Length: 114
Length: 119
Image 1 (cartoon, rainbow over the protein chains, first blue to last red):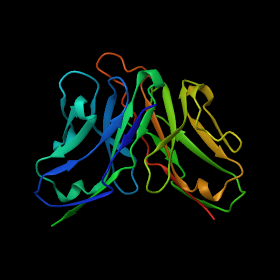
Image 2: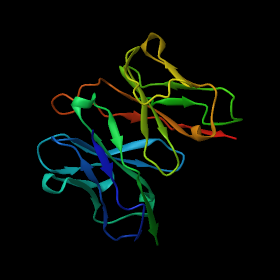
Image 3: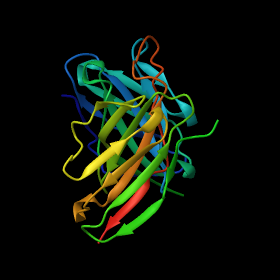
Image 4: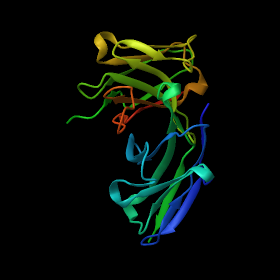
């Protein structure tokens, strides 16, 4: 079965600084990969997804992620963080052979300091 | 376009009581999901419906949890009796169809969730 690891529970960055959130997955074939963001008291919002093709994926709010098969990673990046980006970020993996069920990582809480 | 609606937003009950959550998916979405999100963890799928049929309920504790999706639209998730460890946020999500297909159109859209506290 597929699994996801987000090694960082908390990350703090200064406003305007660059951001990288790590995500490692475990799955034998090519997975479907997602990043979601969750603000306090809100549901999850999709930032971006990778199904196939170009390994650098652009998402909403200026986020991007790169699929690296050799490293089993799908790290999320943003060149300049805004205070409104403070939230919890979840990486998820899906696979057609598992009925397209999403398996989520434990999440990374992003704090932005001014 | 209206999003996924859930109610109530918050619920506090005593252990051994019963509770029910309601979800109204995005109009036209055939697939509906219920997730449990325990504090400090990512969401875990409890049950997946395709129209009004169950696709996957392998992680649903069937001795106490039940879910239905009548007429393939709204859904309710029930816990009876509740335990302390059921304290969590229950998220409902929907997608247009379960197949990824070319281009992958099956984004899951999430509701705001119901926060359950069991005392």
